[in-house]
Image (cartoon, rainbow, N blue to C red; front, top):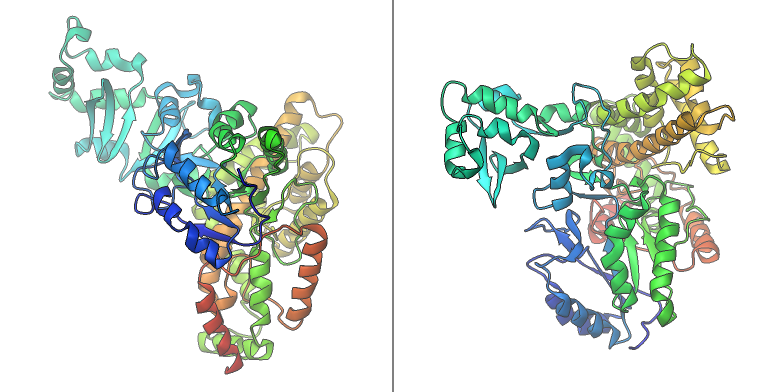
Length: 575
Protein backbone atom coordinates (compact mmCIF):
# COMPACT_ATOMS: atom_id res chain seq x y z
CA UNK A 1 0.00 0.00 0.00
CA UNK A 2 1.29 3.44 -0.93
CA UNK A 3 2.02 5.64 2.08
CA UNK A 4 -0.31 8.68 2.03
CA UNK A 5 1.19 12.11 1.51
CA UNK A 6 1.61 14.54 4.42
CA UNK A 7 -1.43 16.61 5.34
CA UNK A 8 -1.40 19.65 3.06
CA UNK A 9 -5.07 20.13 2.20
CA UNK A 10 -8.30 18.48 3.33
CA UNK A 11 -11.68 18.47 1.61
CA UNK A 12 -14.70 17.66 3.77
CA UNK A 13 -17.33 15.27 2.44
CA UNK A 14 -20.72 15.07 4.20
CA UNK A 15 -21.84 11.45 3.89
CA UNK A 16 -25.47 10.30 4.18
CA UNK A 17 -27.88 7.97 2.40
CA UNK A 18 -27.96 10.30 -0.61
CA UNK A 19 -24.16 10.60 -0.81
CA UNK A 20 -22.48 7.35 0.16
CA UNK A 21 -18.93 6.04 0.35
CA UNK A 22 -19.36 4.80 -3.21
CA UNK A 23 -20.27 8.32 -4.34
CA UNK A 24 -17.28 9.68 -2.45
CA UNK A 25 -15.02 7.19 -4.24
CA UNK A 26 -16.10 8.63 -7.59
CA UNK A 27 -14.88 12.06 -6.49
CA UNK A 28 -11.34 10.94 -5.64
CA UNK A 29 -9.83 11.86 -9.06
CA UNK A 30 -11.48 15.29 -8.81
CA UNK A 31 -10.07 15.81 -5.30
CA UNK A 32 -6.61 14.83 -6.55
CA UNK A 33 -6.87 17.37 -9.36
CA UNK A 34 -7.72 20.05 -6.78
CA UNK A 35 -4.51 19.28 -4.92
CA UNK A 36 -6.26 17.76 -1.91
CA UNK A 37 -4.05 15.47 0.18
CA UNK A 38 -6.78 13.97 2.39
CA UNK A 39 -10.50 13.42 2.10
CA UNK A 40 -12.06 14.42 5.41
CA UNK A 41 -15.40 12.70 5.94
CA UNK A 42 -18.23 13.04 8.41
CA UNK A 43 -18.81 10.09 10.80
CA UNK A 44 -19.42 6.66 9.27
CA UNK A 45 -20.52 4.58 12.27
CA UNK A 46 -24.14 3.37 12.36
CA UNK A 47 -26.37 6.39 12.93
CA UNK A 48 -30.09 7.01 13.21
CA UNK A 49 -31.70 5.92 9.88
CA UNK A 50 -32.14 8.83 7.52
CA UNK A 51 -29.68 11.05 9.39
CA UNK A 52 -28.28 13.81 7.20
CA UNK A 53 -25.25 14.42 9.44
CA UNK A 54 -24.51 11.03 11.13
CA UNK A 55 -23.38 12.55 14.44
CA UNK A 56 -26.34 10.72 16.07
CA UNK A 57 -24.57 7.36 16.40
CA UNK A 58 -26.70 4.40 17.50
CA UNK A 59 -24.08 1.63 17.28
CA UNK A 60 -20.31 2.25 17.34
CA UNK A 61 -19.64 -1.41 16.55
CA UNK A 62 -21.07 -1.21 13.01
CA UNK A 63 -20.49 0.72 9.80
CA UNK A 64 -23.54 2.79 8.85
CA UNK A 65 -25.35 0.54 6.32
CA UNK A 66 -26.79 3.59 4.57
CA UNK A 67 -23.25 4.60 3.58
CA UNK A 68 -22.09 1.22 2.29
CA UNK A 69 -20.58 -2.05 3.42
CA UNK A 70 -17.07 -3.14 4.35
CA UNK A 71 -16.16 -3.64 0.70
CA UNK A 72 -17.32 -0.13 -0.19
CA UNK A 73 -15.35 1.34 2.69
CA UNK A 74 -12.18 -0.49 1.63
CA UNK A 75 -12.70 0.57 -1.98
CA UNK A 76 -12.91 4.23 -0.95
CA UNK A 77 -9.75 3.97 1.14
CA UNK A 78 -7.92 2.10 -1.64
CA UNK A 79 -8.91 4.72 -4.20
CA UNK A 80 -7.38 7.43 -2.01
CA UNK A 81 -4.23 5.52 -1.20
CA UNK A 82 -3.78 4.56 -4.84
CA UNK A 83 -3.36 8.26 -5.62
CA UNK A 84 -1.08 8.90 -2.63
CA UNK A 85 -3.93 10.52 -0.74
CA UNK A 86 -5.35 9.74 2.70
CA UNK A 87 -8.54 9.59 4.75
CA UNK A 88 -9.30 11.76 7.81
CA UNK A 89 -12.38 10.50 9.68
CA UNK A 90 -14.58 12.49 12.03
CA UNK A 91 -15.33 10.53 15.24
CA UNK A 92 -17.97 11.31 17.87
CA UNK A 93 -16.87 10.17 21.34
CA UNK A 94 -19.03 12.57 23.38
CA UNK A 95 -22.57 11.37 22.66
CA UNK A 96 -24.90 8.82 21.10
CA UNK A 97 -28.50 9.01 19.92
CA UNK A 98 -31.41 8.46 22.29
CA UNK A 99 -33.33 5.96 20.19
CA UNK A 100 -34.96 2.53 20.47
CA UNK A 101 -32.55 1.55 17.70
CA UNK A 102 -29.66 2.24 20.08
CA UNK A 103 -29.58 -1.18 21.77
CA UNK A 104 -27.25 0.05 24.51
CA UNK A 105 -29.57 2.90 25.53
CA UNK A 106 -32.68 0.75 25.11
CA UNK A 107 -31.20 -1.81 27.49
CA UNK A 108 -30.67 0.93 30.09
CA UNK A 109 -34.34 1.89 29.75
CA UNK A 110 -35.27 -1.78 30.11
CA UNK A 111 -33.15 -2.60 33.17
CA UNK A 112 -32.22 0.77 34.66
CA UNK A 113 -29.03 0.93 36.70
CA UNK A 114 -28.84 -2.89 36.56
CA UNK A 115 -28.14 -2.79 32.82
CA UNK A 116 -24.56 -3.69 31.85
CA UNK A 117 -24.66 -0.55 29.70
CA UNK A 118 -25.69 1.80 32.52
CA UNK A 119 -22.01 2.72 32.91
CA UNK A 120 -21.91 3.86 29.27
CA UNK A 121 -24.04 6.95 29.78
CA UNK A 122 -23.65 9.98 32.06
CA UNK A 123 -26.80 9.54 34.16
CA UNK A 124 -27.32 11.02 37.63
CA UNK A 125 -29.09 8.03 39.17
CA UNK A 126 -29.25 9.81 42.53
CA UNK A 127 -31.08 12.86 41.17
CA UNK A 128 -34.04 14.15 43.23
CA UNK A 129 -37.34 15.40 41.79
CA UNK A 130 -38.96 12.06 42.71
CA UNK A 131 -37.04 10.14 40.07
CA UNK A 132 -35.91 7.50 42.60
CA UNK A 133 -33.15 6.07 40.44
CA UNK A 134 -35.04 6.37 37.15
CA UNK A 135 -34.00 8.03 33.88
CA UNK A 136 -36.12 11.04 33.03
CA UNK A 137 -37.36 11.07 29.42
CA UNK A 138 -38.81 14.50 28.54
CA UNK A 139 -40.71 13.42 25.43
CA UNK A 140 -44.39 14.04 26.22
CA UNK A 141 -46.37 16.93 24.82
CA UNK A 142 -48.20 17.37 28.11
CA UNK A 143 -48.22 16.08 31.68
CA UNK A 144 -48.37 12.28 31.95
CA UNK A 145 -51.92 12.12 33.32
CA UNK A 146 -53.21 14.31 30.49
CA UNK A 147 -51.43 12.16 27.91
CA UNK A 148 -52.98 9.00 29.38
CA UNK A 149 -56.40 10.66 29.55
CA UNK A 150 -56.22 11.39 25.81
CA UNK A 151 -55.20 7.77 25.09
CA UNK A 152 -51.98 8.93 23.44
CA UNK A 153 -49.86 6.43 25.38
CA UNK A 154 -50.51 2.74 24.84
CA UNK A 155 -49.08 -0.74 25.28
CA UNK A 156 -47.93 -2.54 22.13
CA UNK A 157 -46.32 -5.87 21.29
CA UNK A 158 -43.41 -5.46 18.87
CA UNK A 159 -40.68 -7.89 17.78
CA UNK A 160 -41.52 -10.37 20.52
CA UNK A 161 -41.60 -7.80 23.35
CA UNK A 162 -44.11 -5.60 25.10
CA UNK A 163 -43.36 -1.90 24.73
CA UNK A 164 -44.95 1.45 25.46
CA UNK A 165 -45.79 3.58 22.42
CA UNK A 166 -46.21 7.35 22.31
CA UNK A 167 -46.66 8.47 18.70
CA UNK A 168 -43.26 7.75 17.07
CA UNK A 169 -41.59 6.98 20.41
CA UNK A 170 -41.16 3.43 21.66
CA UNK A 171 -40.00 2.34 25.13
CA UNK A 172 -39.28 -1.13 26.53
CA UNK A 173 -41.28 -2.65 29.37
CA UNK A 174 -39.23 -3.96 32.29
CA UNK A 175 -39.79 -7.76 32.50
CA UNK A 176 -40.25 -7.54 36.26
CA UNK A 177 -43.35 -5.40 35.71
CA UNK A 178 -45.02 -7.81 33.29
CA UNK A 179 -47.28 -9.41 35.96
CA UNK A 180 -48.99 -6.02 36.18
CA UNK A 181 -49.59 -6.24 32.45
CA UNK A 182 -50.80 -9.85 32.53
CA UNK A 183 -53.02 -9.47 35.61
CA UNK A 184 -56.29 -8.55 33.83
CA UNK A 185 -56.05 -11.67 31.64
CA UNK A 186 -55.98 -14.26 34.40
CA UNK A 187 -54.91 -17.88 34.17
CA UNK A 188 -51.62 -18.74 32.44
CA UNK A 189 -50.85 -15.28 31.11
CA UNK A 190 -47.70 -16.37 29.29
CA UNK A 191 -49.75 -18.77 27.17
CA UNK A 192 -52.11 -16.04 26.04
CA UNK A 193 -52.01 -14.29 22.67
CA UNK A 194 -50.04 -11.01 23.10
CA UNK A 195 -52.68 -9.11 21.15
CA UNK A 196 -55.35 -10.34 23.58
CA UNK A 197 -53.20 -9.37 26.56
CA UNK A 198 -52.82 -5.84 25.19
CA UNK A 199 -56.55 -5.63 24.45
CA UNK A 200 -57.56 -6.84 27.92
CA UNK A 201 -55.04 -4.57 29.63
CA UNK A 202 -56.30 -1.54 27.72
CA UNK A 203 -60.01 -2.21 28.25
CA UNK A 204 -62.41 -1.30 31.02
CA UNK A 205 -62.81 1.50 33.54
CA UNK A 206 -59.52 0.67 35.29
CA UNK A 207 -57.41 0.68 32.10
CA UNK A 208 -55.96 4.15 32.60
CA UNK A 209 -55.10 3.48 36.23
CA UNK A 210 -53.42 0.21 35.23
CA UNK A 211 -51.45 2.01 32.54
CA UNK A 212 -50.33 4.69 35.00
CA UNK A 213 -49.18 2.01 37.45
CA UNK A 214 -47.28 0.20 34.70
CA UNK A 215 -45.60 3.42 33.52
CA UNK A 216 -44.60 4.37 37.05
CA UNK A 217 -42.97 0.96 37.55
CA UNK A 218 -40.50 1.41 34.67
CA UNK A 219 -36.80 2.38 35.15
CA UNK A 220 -37.56 5.59 33.24
CA UNK A 221 -39.96 8.46 33.90
CA UNK A 222 -41.96 9.72 30.92
CA UNK A 223 -42.26 13.48 31.40
CA UNK A 224 -43.50 16.71 29.83
CA UNK A 225 -40.79 18.05 27.54
CA UNK A 226 -40.85 21.45 29.24
CA UNK A 227 -39.44 19.87 32.41
CA UNK A 228 -36.16 18.93 30.74
CA UNK A 229 -34.40 22.21 31.59
CA UNK A 230 -34.88 21.75 35.33
CA UNK A 231 -35.32 18.00 35.85
CA UNK A 232 -33.46 15.99 33.21
CA UNK A 233 -30.90 13.70 34.86
CA UNK A 234 -28.72 12.60 31.97
CA UNK A 235 -26.09 14.85 30.44
CA UNK A 236 -26.79 15.78 26.84
CA UNK A 237 -24.96 17.24 23.87
CA UNK A 238 -25.73 20.89 24.65
CA UNK A 239 -29.51 20.97 25.27
CA UNK A 240 -30.46 18.33 22.68
CA UNK A 241 -32.52 15.76 24.59
CA UNK A 242 -32.09 12.97 22.04
CA UNK A 243 -28.27 13.00 22.22
CA UNK A 244 -27.03 11.43 25.47
CA UNK A 245 -23.47 11.91 26.74
CA UNK A 246 -21.13 8.90 26.79
CA UNK A 247 -18.69 8.24 29.67
CA UNK A 248 -15.42 7.89 27.77
CA UNK A 249 -13.54 8.18 31.07
CA UNK A 250 -14.49 4.52 31.62
CA UNK A 251 -11.83 2.38 29.90
CA UNK A 252 -14.33 -0.37 29.01
CA UNK A 253 -16.63 2.17 27.36
CA UNK A 254 -13.69 3.64 25.45
CA UNK A 255 -12.60 0.21 24.21
CA UNK A 256 -16.11 -0.77 23.11
CA UNK A 257 -16.88 2.50 21.32
CA UNK A 258 -13.50 2.74 19.53
CA UNK A 259 -12.90 -0.90 18.58
CA UNK A 260 -14.12 -0.64 14.99
CA UNK A 261 -12.30 2.64 14.31
CA UNK A 262 -9.06 1.17 15.67
CA UNK A 263 -9.54 -1.94 13.53
CA UNK A 264 -9.73 0.27 10.43
CA UNK A 265 -6.54 2.02 11.54
CA UNK A 266 -4.79 -1.31 12.04
CA UNK A 267 -5.75 -2.42 8.53
CA UNK A 268 -4.43 0.82 7.05
CA UNK A 269 -7.80 2.21 5.97
CA UNK A 270 -7.70 5.39 8.06
CA UNK A 271 -4.90 7.94 8.15
CA UNK A 272 -6.10 10.29 10.88
CA UNK A 273 -9.07 11.26 13.05
CA UNK A 274 -10.86 14.47 13.92
CA UNK A 275 -12.41 14.41 17.41
CA UNK A 276 -15.81 16.08 17.57
CA UNK A 277 -16.62 18.30 20.60
CA UNK A 278 -13.57 17.30 22.63
CA UNK A 279 -14.49 19.84 25.33
CA UNK A 280 -17.58 17.82 26.24
CA UNK A 281 -15.54 14.96 27.65
CA UNK A 282 -14.88 14.36 31.36
CA UNK A 283 -11.10 14.76 30.95
CA UNK A 284 -10.12 15.68 27.37
CA UNK A 285 -6.37 15.31 27.96
CA UNK A 286 -6.75 11.82 29.45
CA UNK A 287 -9.04 10.78 26.59
CA UNK A 288 -6.60 12.05 23.98
CA UNK A 289 -3.68 10.25 25.64
CA UNK A 290 -5.64 7.00 25.56
CA UNK A 291 -6.63 7.59 21.94
CA UNK A 292 -3.03 8.46 20.97
CA UNK A 293 -1.70 5.29 22.57
CA UNK A 294 -4.41 3.13 20.95
CA UNK A 295 -3.80 4.59 17.49
CA UNK A 296 -0.04 4.11 17.77
CA UNK A 297 -0.39 0.48 18.90
CA UNK A 298 -2.68 -0.35 16.00
CA UNK A 299 -0.61 1.51 13.38
CA UNK A 300 2.80 0.32 14.66
CA UNK A 301 3.13 -2.53 12.18
CA UNK A 302 2.84 -0.03 9.30
CA UNK A 303 5.21 2.46 10.92
CA UNK A 304 2.41 5.03 10.82
CA UNK A 305 1.48 7.73 13.31
CA UNK A 306 -2.10 8.82 12.46
CA UNK A 307 -2.62 12.43 13.52
CA UNK A 308 -5.42 13.52 15.85
CA UNK A 309 -7.18 16.82 15.19
CA UNK A 310 -9.55 18.30 17.75
CA UNK A 311 -12.60 20.45 17.28
CA UNK A 312 -11.42 23.04 19.79
CA UNK A 313 -12.56 26.64 19.60
CA UNK A 314 -9.87 28.94 21.00
CA UNK A 315 -11.07 32.30 22.25
CA UNK A 316 -8.97 35.42 21.59
CA UNK A 317 -5.57 34.83 23.27
CA UNK A 318 -6.34 31.29 24.43
CA UNK A 319 -3.74 28.66 23.46
CA UNK A 320 -4.08 24.95 22.79
CA UNK A 321 -2.68 23.00 25.74
CA UNK A 322 0.89 21.84 25.21
CA UNK A 323 0.31 18.46 26.88
CA UNK A 324 -2.37 17.37 24.40
CA UNK A 325 -0.99 14.64 22.08
CA UNK A 326 -2.61 16.07 18.96
CA UNK A 327 -1.52 17.54 15.64
CA UNK A 328 -3.62 20.64 16.25
CA UNK A 329 -7.10 22.08 15.94
CA UNK A 330 -9.44 22.34 12.97
CA UNK A 331 -8.46 26.00 12.59
CA UNK A 332 -11.26 28.31 13.76
CA UNK A 333 -8.69 30.65 15.27
CA UNK A 334 -7.13 31.12 11.81
CA UNK A 335 -10.53 31.81 10.28
CA UNK A 336 -11.11 34.73 12.64
CA UNK A 337 -7.59 36.12 12.26
CA UNK A 338 -7.99 36.10 8.48
CA UNK A 339 -11.44 37.68 8.68
CA UNK A 340 -10.12 40.56 10.77
CA UNK A 341 -7.51 41.44 8.13
CA UNK A 342 -10.21 41.84 5.49
CA UNK A 343 -12.20 44.38 7.52
CA UNK A 344 -11.49 48.10 7.62
CA UNK A 345 -11.27 48.85 11.34
CA UNK A 346 -12.37 52.49 11.02
CA UNK A 347 -15.30 51.58 8.78
CA UNK A 348 -16.34 48.77 11.09
CA UNK A 349 -16.44 51.21 14.01
CA UNK A 350 -18.65 53.60 12.02
CA UNK A 351 -21.01 50.73 11.18
CA UNK A 352 -21.27 49.76 14.85
CA UNK A 353 -21.91 53.36 15.89
CA UNK A 354 -24.71 53.65 13.32
CA UNK A 355 -26.12 50.28 14.38
CA UNK A 356 -26.23 51.38 18.01
CA UNK A 357 -27.85 54.68 17.06
CA UNK A 358 -30.55 52.94 15.03
CA UNK A 359 -31.33 50.62 17.94
CA UNK A 360 -31.37 53.49 20.42
CA UNK A 361 -28.46 52.11 22.47
CA UNK A 362 -26.70 54.69 24.60
CA UNK A 363 -22.99 55.18 24.98
CA UNK A 364 -22.98 53.33 28.30
CA UNK A 365 -24.38 50.11 26.89
CA UNK A 366 -25.36 47.49 26.47
CA UNK A 367 -22.40 46.42 24.39
CA UNK A 368 -21.68 42.93 23.14
CA UNK A 369 -20.05 41.82 26.39
CA UNK A 370 -23.27 42.71 28.22
CA UNK A 371 -25.43 40.95 25.65
CA UNK A 372 -23.18 37.87 25.84
CA UNK A 373 -23.43 37.68 29.63
CA UNK A 374 -27.21 38.08 29.48
CA UNK A 375 -27.54 35.43 26.76
CA UNK A 376 -25.44 32.91 28.70
CA UNK A 377 -27.48 33.55 31.86
CA UNK A 378 -30.68 33.12 29.87
CA UNK A 379 -29.59 29.78 28.41
CA UNK A 380 -28.38 28.55 31.78
CA UNK A 381 -31.76 29.35 33.34
CA UNK A 382 -33.95 28.08 30.53
CA UNK A 383 -31.99 25.15 29.08
CA UNK A 384 -29.29 24.09 31.54
CA UNK A 385 -30.80 24.59 34.97
CA UNK A 386 -30.75 20.82 35.56
CA UNK A 387 -27.01 20.76 34.83
CA UNK A 388 -26.37 23.65 37.22
CA UNK A 389 -28.42 21.86 39.89
CA UNK A 390 -26.35 18.73 39.39
CA UNK A 391 -23.07 20.62 39.80
CA UNK A 392 -24.38 22.31 42.95
CA UNK A 393 -25.74 19.04 44.36
CA UNK A 394 -22.34 17.40 43.89
CA UNK A 395 -20.52 20.39 45.38
CA UNK A 396 -22.61 20.59 48.58
CA UNK A 397 -20.90 17.83 50.65
CA UNK A 398 -17.46 19.10 49.63
CA UNK A 399 -18.26 22.63 50.82
CA UNK A 400 -19.78 21.37 54.06
CA UNK A 401 -16.84 19.11 54.82
CA UNK A 402 -14.42 22.01 54.43
CA UNK A 403 -16.59 24.50 56.31
CA UNK A 404 -19.93 23.43 57.91
CA UNK A 405 -21.09 27.06 57.82
CA UNK A 406 -20.05 27.75 54.21
CA UNK A 407 -23.40 27.06 52.60
CA UNK A 408 -26.42 29.23 53.26
CA UNK A 409 -28.71 27.36 50.85
CA UNK A 410 -28.53 25.25 47.71
CA UNK A 411 -30.37 28.04 45.92
CA UNK A 412 -27.54 30.42 46.77
CA UNK A 413 -25.04 27.85 45.53
CA UNK A 414 -26.91 27.42 42.25
CA UNK A 415 -26.86 31.20 41.79
CA UNK A 416 -23.10 31.29 42.36
CA UNK A 417 -22.49 28.40 39.95
CA UNK A 418 -24.66 30.04 37.30
CA UNK A 419 -22.90 33.42 37.56
CA UNK A 420 -19.46 31.80 37.56
CA UNK A 421 -20.40 29.79 34.46
CA UNK A 422 -21.86 32.85 32.71
CA UNK A 423 -18.67 34.79 33.45
CA UNK A 424 -16.34 32.11 32.13
CA UNK A 425 -14.21 33.69 29.38
CA UNK A 426 -13.49 30.58 27.27
CA UNK A 427 -15.17 27.27 26.50
CA UNK A 428 -13.67 25.43 29.45
CA UNK A 429 -10.77 24.87 31.80
CA UNK A 430 -8.99 21.54 32.25
CA UNK A 431 -8.75 21.03 36.00
CA UNK A 432 -8.39 17.42 37.09
CA UNK A 433 -8.66 17.73 40.87
CA UNK A 434 -4.93 18.00 41.52
CA UNK A 435 -2.74 21.09 41.40
CA UNK A 436 -4.21 23.65 39.01
CA UNK A 437 -2.16 24.59 35.97
CA UNK A 438 -1.37 28.32 35.71
CA UNK A 439 -3.70 28.69 32.70
CA UNK A 440 -6.59 27.10 34.60
CA UNK A 441 -5.99 29.13 37.73
CA UNK A 442 -5.99 32.32 35.67
CA UNK A 443 -9.29 31.36 33.99
CA UNK A 444 -11.05 30.53 37.27
CA UNK A 445 -9.80 33.70 38.94
CA UNK A 446 -10.81 35.78 35.94
CA UNK A 447 -14.31 34.27 35.99
CA UNK A 448 -14.58 34.83 39.74
CA UNK A 449 -13.63 38.49 39.37
CA UNK A 450 -16.18 38.98 36.58
CA UNK A 451 -18.93 37.23 38.57
CA UNK A 452 -18.09 39.31 41.65
CA UNK A 453 -18.29 42.49 39.57
CA UNK A 454 -21.89 41.71 38.64
CA UNK A 455 -22.65 42.16 42.33
CA UNK A 456 -25.65 39.81 42.66
CA UNK A 457 -23.94 36.78 44.14
CA UNK A 458 -22.87 35.79 47.63
CA UNK A 459 -19.23 36.90 47.48
CA UNK A 460 -18.12 34.72 50.39
CA UNK A 461 -19.76 31.63 48.89
CA UNK A 462 -18.25 32.47 45.49
CA UNK A 463 -14.79 32.55 47.08
CA UNK A 464 -15.37 29.16 48.72
CA UNK A 465 -16.54 27.64 45.42
CA UNK A 466 -13.45 28.84 43.57
CA UNK A 467 -11.35 27.52 46.45
CA UNK A 468 -12.90 24.07 45.94
CA UNK A 469 -12.20 24.27 42.22
CA UNK A 470 -8.58 25.35 42.61
CA UNK A 471 -7.31 23.92 45.88
CA UNK A 472 -6.95 20.30 46.87
CA UNK A 473 -7.40 19.97 50.62
CA UNK A 474 -5.15 17.23 52.11
CA UNK A 475 -7.82 16.53 54.72
CA UNK A 476 -10.40 15.55 52.11
CA UNK A 477 -11.36 11.90 52.60
CA UNK A 478 -11.62 9.50 49.68
CA UNK A 479 -15.36 10.00 49.10
CA UNK A 480 -15.06 13.79 49.33
CA UNK A 481 -12.03 13.78 47.05
CA UNK A 482 -14.02 11.86 44.43
CA UNK A 483 -17.05 14.14 44.80
CA UNK A 484 -14.80 17.18 44.35
CA UNK A 485 -13.30 15.70 41.19
CA UNK A 486 -16.81 14.97 39.89
CA UNK A 487 -18.04 18.47 40.73
CA UNK A 488 -15.07 20.02 38.92
CA UNK A 489 -15.73 17.89 35.84
CA UNK A 490 -19.45 18.70 35.81
CA UNK A 491 -18.68 22.42 36.10
CA UNK A 492 -16.24 22.24 33.19
CA UNK A 493 -18.74 20.25 31.12
CA UNK A 494 -21.37 23.00 31.49
CA UNK A 495 -19.16 25.99 30.60
CA UNK A 496 -18.81 24.76 26.99
CA UNK A 497 -22.57 24.45 26.30
CA UNK A 498 -23.13 27.82 27.98
CA UNK A 499 -20.59 29.40 25.64
CA UNK A 500 -21.85 27.63 22.52
CA UNK A 501 -25.56 28.18 23.07
CA UNK A 502 -25.30 31.48 24.90
CA UNK A 503 -22.87 33.24 22.59
CA UNK A 504 -22.66 31.32 19.30
CA UNK A 505 -26.37 30.58 18.97
CA UNK A 506 -27.90 33.52 20.87
CA UNK A 507 -25.74 36.60 21.47
CA UNK A 508 -24.29 36.56 17.94
CA UNK A 509 -27.85 36.88 16.62
CA UNK A 510 -28.83 39.60 19.10
CA UNK A 511 -25.91 41.97 18.46
CA UNK A 512 -24.73 42.08 14.86
CA UNK A 513 -23.36 45.39 13.54
CA UNK A 514 -21.21 43.63 10.90
CA UNK A 515 -22.32 40.00 10.68
CA UNK A 516 -19.06 38.72 9.20
CA UNK A 517 -17.52 39.23 12.66
CA UNK A 518 -20.24 37.08 14.25
CA UNK A 519 -18.57 33.75 13.69
CA UNK A 520 -17.66 30.66 15.70
CA UNK A 521 -14.80 31.69 17.96
CA UNK A 522 -15.22 35.36 17.03
CA UNK A 523 -16.96 38.38 18.55
CA UNK A 524 -18.51 41.55 17.09
CA UNK A 525 -16.43 43.75 19.42
CA UNK A 526 -13.05 42.35 18.45
CA UNK A 527 -10.23 44.91 18.28
CA UNK A 528 -9.31 45.17 14.58
CA UNK A 529 -6.64 47.85 14.84
CA UNK A 530 -3.73 45.36 14.89
CA UNK A 531 -5.31 42.58 12.80
CA UNK A 532 -2.39 42.09 10.43
CA UNK A 533 0.15 41.87 13.23
CA UNK A 534 -2.06 39.41 15.08
CA UNK A 535 -2.38 37.23 11.94
CA UNK A 536 1.40 37.02 11.54
CA UNK A 537 1.96 36.40 15.25
CA UNK A 538 -0.56 33.58 15.16
CA UNK A 539 1.07 32.03 12.12
CA UNK A 540 4.51 32.21 13.75
CA UNK A 541 3.20 30.62 16.92
CA UNK A 542 1.49 27.80 15.02
CA UNK A 543 4.66 27.16 13.04
CA UNK A 544 6.65 26.90 16.28
CA UNK A 545 4.15 24.96 18.41
CA UNK A 546 1.60 23.28 16.11
CA UNK A 547 3.11 23.14 12.60
CA UNK A 548 0.63 20.43 11.47
CA UNK A 549 -2.49 22.20 12.72
CA UNK A 550 -5.28 22.67 10.20
CA UNK A 551 -6.35 26.09 8.96
CA UNK A 552 -9.72 26.97 7.48
CA UNK A 553 -11.84 29.79 6.13
CA UNK A 554 -15.15 28.00 6.81
CA UNK A 555 -16.44 24.62 7.99
CA UNK A 556 -19.76 22.77 8.24
CA UNK A 557 -20.29 24.54 11.60
CA UNK A 558 -19.61 28.15 10.62
CA UNK A 559 -22.52 30.57 10.54
CA UNK A 560 -21.83 31.89 7.05
CA UNK A 561 -19.74 30.79 4.10
CA UNK A 562 -16.41 32.45 3.35
CA UNK A 563 -17.66 34.14 0.17
CA UNK A 564 -20.66 35.64 1.95
CA UNK A 565 -18.45 36.96 4.75
CA UNK A 566 -16.11 38.45 2.14
CA UNK A 567 -19.01 40.41 0.63
CA UNK A 568 -20.02 41.66 4.08
CA UNK A 569 -16.42 42.70 4.78
CA UNK A 570 -16.53 45.07 1.82
CA UNK A 571 -19.22 47.08 3.62
CA UNK A 572 -16.55 48.22 6.11
CA UNK A 573 -14.79 49.98 3.23
CA UNK A 574 -17.96 51.92 2.32
CA UNK A 575 -19.61 52.44 5.72
